[in-house]
Length: 131
Image 1 (cartoon, rainbow, N blue to C red):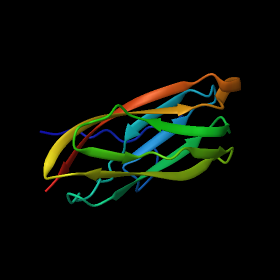
Image 2: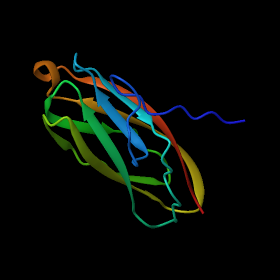
Image 3: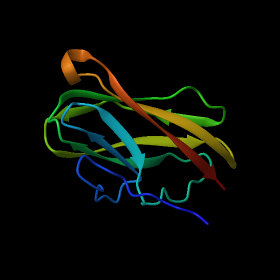
């Protein structure tokens, strides 16, 4: 039996086709969660884009960074996304698995511009598989 909770924003689920949803609540706290959207099929040796929907209830501006510790067999392209203060923005990052494998990666999201540079963060674990 599996249970998949919807991505939750400040006031309810985030409506998104992206596999990840980041919410920044009115107090500028950052939360990231898996949505119900699938990641899709990953093929070894190919870059794959993972979409992220950002719901910015605090209308924060500044960089939104994604960080991760190195994971053997996994390459990450984690560009810093600029928060414009818009309520909803789309972002993305890329992953590449070197060979057919399964890896577990922890991603940390930080809104570095929130509250005068005080880094608020949230983490999510992704289990990625390439066949």
